[in-house]
Length: 366
Image 1 (cartoon, rainbow, N blue to C red):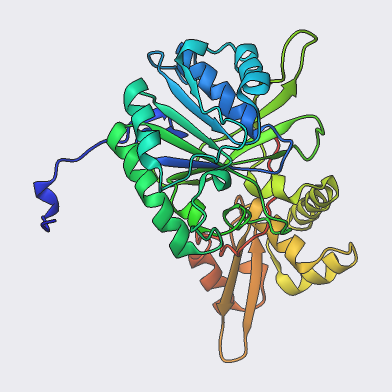
Image 2 (image 1 turned 45 degrees about the horizontal axis):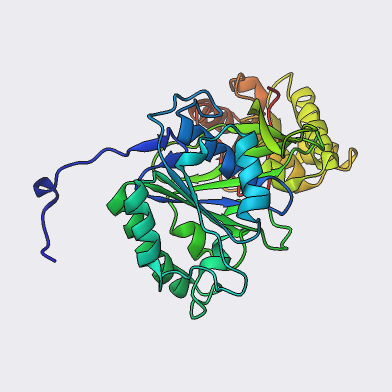
């Protein structure tokens, strides 16, 4: 393989199957707990792709195309067939992998040629591996970053060669963390190997509604979250019903408890009221916050969500202060007793807030 200067290579634009959310020629991953509709969501997309219907966010669909569904948990005849029919799919454009009882699953990357033959024969534009763990070779260590990357690299090459989007589906681990990049089962190599990552979780305020978020997008700015529900009519199988845009992101839905959202809102209201007459030193803010039983972490997250600036200034060897300032406020000389501090505050009034790592951020009202 020769080394080339970049000007010798033609630039290529990203080709989107679902604009901003599902890129042709790349791997994508969908994480979520059981029972939240991950499989149903992928089948809903299959139905749209095989018929050319618009995508859930209103993006136009393309020409009808074939899809391939490899599902290790649901039967092709008694489950997948009915769900795709209920979603309005063109069944003639859907290929499924039906395992004979006692037969091993298709294993990757060892049997990648079998999947490649199916993609080439059908010209499939969307391939679902549900769940990806069931289709890995026994020699692949799912807890090893190196092993996972080595196993998924040929799959990524396959997607690029045939210009299809390959969707991996994975369960979440049992951690209580709120960083979506680390919540997928086993190695982070799975999500690192994918250019786009999705997460589904329960809506914190609507128990029968769910949220599709995008915690990672290496090819485009992150897209807005979408809400959906799972419905089952008397004569049809379960299917997805989209409910429009959701204000929750991946951090919000992983917190999962309305009580914490309520505490965050209280902290926001406290800060807006406490700072309404002008910037205040953090020592005063914290002293007042303790009476409301706000933790430092809750108060700081509320600060970031309100775009409050935190600025430390020095007026001499011992004279210094740290002020919190609302985005609409400006410093004046009357804010503090130290002229040197006031002058520095004027200069720094447009400084960006120093953001701290957050586990979750209070969602702004829709």
